[in-house]
Image 1 (cartoon, rainbow, N blue to C red):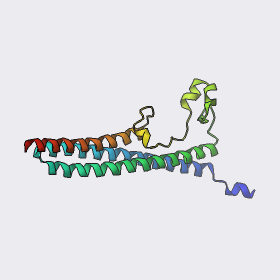
Image 2: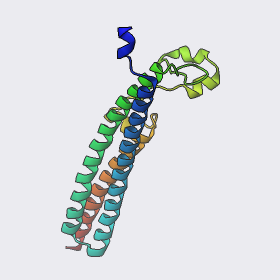
Image 3: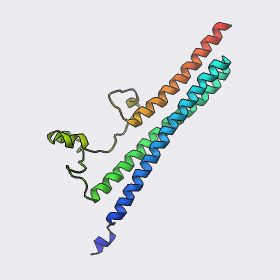
Length: 175
């Protein structure tokens, strides 16, 4: 009887799962907002470059874009780790609520045994999001929202560097 007393109620588990989903969505929204801000700053960099046609003005704006892009990369990386933790938490809650069944919420076993299951189960099987490493940014075999956002930050960072190089070359040719 003592054991049942310490076990959380289904309602508590549902609430914990709801909070984990809320945290996950909040982090995802923050991640999207960072890439939006970096894109706006990238557009501002172009505006400054076209308006002033001055290497130092372009360099100053580009430094801001590069620094913010790096922070965006770190935020995206951190949020991926958070996403993994939240999904593990959510899946544990689902398990405690006995929701993991092939006809309800099938689990991806992480091996080839899922191939023996019906296609409906294969397509709907859930698993913890994969960790990613630096090479996943350039590997187009892997694709998910977090990697897309990470690639956008990297692309805008490279774009800012290229704009500075082009402005430098252009200013040298005018001398």
